[in-house]
Structures are given as structure tokens and as C-alpha cells.
Image (cartoon, rainbow, N blue to C red; front, side):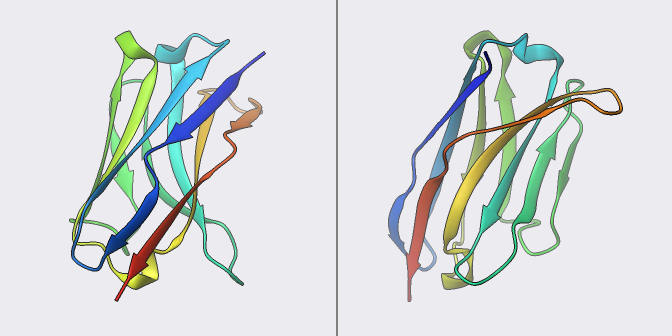
Length: 118
């Protein structure tokens, strides 16, 4: 059974930084594409960043240049380094894992709250 556990959320002032971690178990981590999503209050879930098994990364325009996604296959962990945080980054952040073939199931973590105060 695939399990994803996020950590690293919290309260930070605008302009500050946080690093989220997501540790995976029950899957061959290195074969998964990993992603971070977020859901702000009253809004739909938004894709934040992705990293493929070949370490190709993509970012939402809203976070490009401020957030960095990375992975450590030896630790079965994906990270999201967030800098220059803004109040509009406040959301629950979710980790996502998916094998890289059409129709592969998605796996989700429980989410971690990030709150950015102005």
C-alpha cells in the first residue's frame, strides 16, 4: 500500500521560507513522478510543481522563481523549498505520486498547512 506523509508546514511571515517534505513508502519511489498541489480556502486544488523520474521539473507560474521541487530517491522523499512566501501562498499543500504511464493511479498524502501572515 502506497503511503505519503508530508511534513514541514507551519506559520511564517511574508517574505519568509519553508521547506516541505514528503516521504513515500510502499512504492518504487524512483519510478514515480512526484508533485505538490495546494488548496486554498474557497478555491480549487492547484498544481504547484512536478518532478519526473528523470528529474524534469515544472512549476505553476504563480510560484516560478520562488519555489523549488527536488527529490532524494535514496530517502524516498520529495521536497518543496518555498521562498519569498506571500499571503496568497496560504493553503494546505498535498504531495502526489504517480507512475509514469497513462491511467496510472494517483496517490495522495494527508496534506500539511502552510500559513503566510502579512
